[in-house]
Amino acid sequence: MTPTTSSPATPRPPRRRTVLAGIGAVPLTGAASASTGAPRPDRAAGHAPTTLLRDAELVLTMDPALGTGELGTLEHADVLMRDGRIAGVGRRLPAPAGARVVDVSGMLVLPGFVDLHNHLWQSSIRGGCATQDLYGWLAGCNRATLPKIGPQDMYRFVRLAALDALQAGVTTLVDWVHPIPFDTSEQYIRALDHTGLRFVYAMAQNTANLDLVPRVKKELLDPLPLASAQVSVHAGMDGLDLLRRSREVARDLGLMINSHVLEHRGDRAQEPIRSLRTADAFGPDLLMNHAIHLTDDEIAQVADADVRVAHCPLSNMRLASGIIRLPEFERRGVRTGLGHDGGTNDTSDMFGVMKAAVGLQRALHQNADVHPTIPAVLRMATLGGAECLHMADQVGSLTPGKRADVVVLDPGTLNFAPRFDWVGQIVLNGQPGNVSQVYVDGRARKLRGKLVDVDTAEVVREAERAAARVRAGS
Image 1 (cartoon, one colour):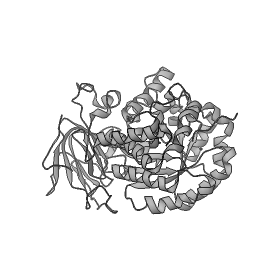
Image 2: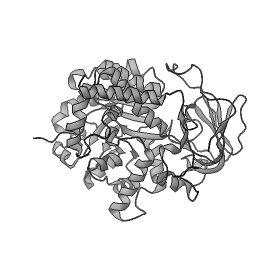
Image 3: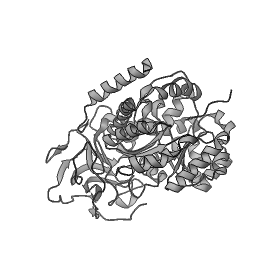
Image 4: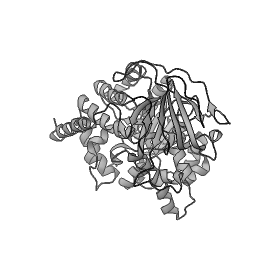
């Protein structure tokens, strides 16, 4: 189905890496404030256009106050975006003067996906070290490649992967960035900014260069309205000094700490949970990635401290890392979202991530009712991810007043049709090709199945040239 618009749209084993407003009746409207910040270099200045998505077959608001059931579903409903925010959700909303009206009849509308964990530069090693587990992949692909990537080629790899995530419906992305020089950070952030994604730049540095973290935040991230920061660091007792100092930097800057924890069973030798607690980094401002090999006592500690977790099932499968204990997390109330995890996910497909998150637990427990259910995994991919980042007041649902990060899916395709249970089909049948439209902060980034103002063939050509240079060691 092709939407129409009223106007055109513009020895020791190695470690992993060295609030909702209650609004009831429909139609629903809410005040929308103007978007802020300087225009990005590749987009025209000014406010985001007012856009009315008209007559969607199904809207999943992720806000139970805005529809029926836990996902807040509405049939034959509209979504109004104004000044970069959700301005209204409901049936037969009036079109404001000058609004772009987009016919989305037959389509499905939901909040953009939140990717809690990625390493975009690893598009340079897609499919690599395919016979290796985590430690083999780290030695043979990850650590062998990163030092060879210069600033300009970093831009090319990051842009390729960021656009892949965007076209697949990801509107907010957390990128765990290894220690890199300032000039490489400039190009990394420039690539992210040029895609139009909302992103969290989770930066790691070694002890000698920790001063780069506040500098990158102040000079490169703070001027960008869609950017925010975290401090990344390894968890382990042998790196306790750096962990403590990174925690101090994060606290001074008001940022979350982001760490890989117990992805591989061999990581236990480093006592990562003990190290995080010793460094006073164990609490709601900690995002742990993977967290596969936690004991019962450690899960209880995570829950009691309100630590957040990023689950990356496709990467965990690829690297033979194990299966996370999601049902125990859910019973304890641990906030958990979903992530792609860079080169070991090999592509961007949140539908595949959701399906794997459901399927792994069903296969392990031989129980179709085990957590996550279909509605639960959709929430993990949207509002759940936003909650893990303390961003649920901004994104993750279509609640009026939040930022207008919206995805439109086309179910009229060979892989999706015919209609039986569209909520189930989003998870079990959906593919990136079903993503017809993507809006970030109210701006169209993908329309009619194509990225806006992006020459994808040239992006691929530039990445191929960069990969050839890396392979040649230049």
